[in-house]
Each structure stands twice: as structure tokens, then as C-alpha cells.
Figure 1 (cartoon, one colour):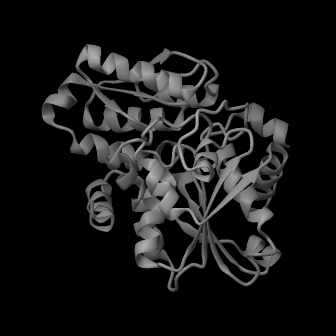
Figure 2 (figure 1 turned 120 degrees about the vertical axis):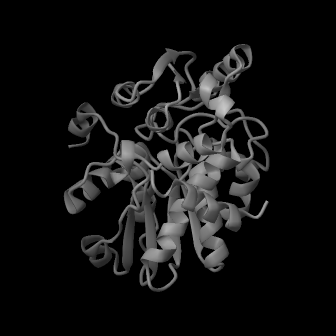
Figure 3 (figure 1 turned 90 degrees about the vertical axis):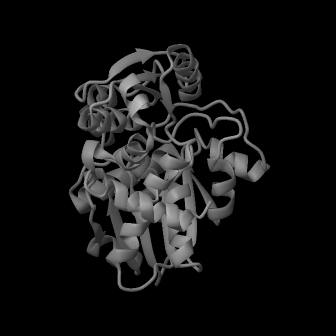
Length: 317
């Protein structure tokens, strides 16, 4: 597959449905880190996260018959809200399976766009397995949160936008890693255009299945502990198409603690005056962890989402 060509096609396909989000230069972070730091503000995207890109790209690629039957998926929140939103816009019925510990704020985000919500299991992988099973029984199309080339190519449109939003290449791009669809698509395009860019993938220590799988050389079945970065939490499906892509594009893996994530979220909200969720805080925590290495460099950080409950904001404050 020609990733560059497919990502460009996907970016054009979804352009009328998604926002071209700001790639905002941060004066306070650049001064603090003695470098040039930009934030890609996907927290300002429709539904509050980057996920609408992949959702629209997938739904626009399925047949009329599939659209008529409806779609199923599994999600901890952001993918579900994005798919529900895209389905509502395109007139497709949508059912989302969620693990029992899913974030209440993200569940409400899904419901407001008309999705039918069903609970199953304690991990997103459990919900994914159930959703796949039901898609076969009901003859409906299953849409993975990450394990799908259309989803990955849709997320890659972020890379297309970033390239157009800066005059010179970045030295480093920092991206949070869950199932690998976001970093897989975005980093693939960035590396095609800027082959020397250093891609940092980051995850919370409590749930870093993809990064630990890359280190092991195979997809691992690991238990995920509770994390404020619920958008990246959970396992990775066996034989996921994102695994070889992530192995190829991730140059460095960073693991961050819950304390580091919360401190990073606090600092970002204080300096940039925007709400962000834990998965976005994970990328900013990696920025702090690599502070010395990033001195004098041109650095991009992907702020992947802003869906956070007021209760969590209170805890951080």
C-alpha cells in the first residue's frame, strides 16, 4: 500500500467534514524549554478528539448496503463519540460496545450523537471481541478504533495538515500511543515528507501495551492498570495492522507515570488556557521528560483530545 498516496486521498475525502485544527506555536513552552514548541490542537476537533478523521474516512469508504445495515464498534469513549457523530451526519445507525469502566463524560459524549451504547467486559479488547461477534451475527460492519487501514489513513490527515502549517521541518514529533492508529497514520506521512524527523511514541506506565509489544517484538497480552490516560488504555488485538507500522515509525518510546501526566496537564492548562484529557497529557508529560534533549529543537506535540470530566479536572487542580 502506498501510504503517502492513501493518506492524501483520505485527507481530501474527509476535508469537508473535519476541522483543520491549529498547529499553534507556544510562547510559554518554547521559552521554558529553550526551543520552538508547537501544539497540534485536536482537542478543538469535532467531538473533542482526532478520532472523527478516521471515523469519517471509514464510513465514506463503505458501501451503500453497509451504510443501510448500520455499523458496530467498541470504544473507551473518543472513537465511539466520533463514530456516532460521523454516523449521525451521514445517516448511518450506530451501536457502540464499551467496557464497564468507561469514562462517564465520554459515554455522555457518545450518547448525545445518537449512538446505542452497550456495556461488555472490563477492557476495550473485551468490548472489541463482543462487537466483532455481534457484527457477524447481525450482518453489520464492524469498525475498529485502530485496527483498520481506513481508520489509520484518516488519522494520517493530521500529518498532511502539520506539513502545511510550518515553514521548515520539525526535528521531533511527540504522539501518544494506544492502539497505534494515530501515531501510525500521522508519523507515516510526516516521515515521508520529513525523513529525518524523530518520532517519540509515549504511553502511561500503567497501560503501554503497544510500546511494550514493540520492545518484545510481538503483540503482548498484558493487563492494563487504571490510568488517567483512558484514551490510550487497553490491549492491542492480535495481528493488529498497526503493530508493524508502529515498529517502523516510532524511533523512541517514552513511559510516563500518573503523577507526570497530571503535572503536565496542570502546566498545560495553566499556560495555554485549554482543557485537555489524559491522553493529551501523556504527550505533554513526555515533552517534560525529554526537556534536556529537546533544547534548541523544533518540536511538535499532538494534543489528541480534550474530553475530560469536571471531577478529573478538580483532582488535577
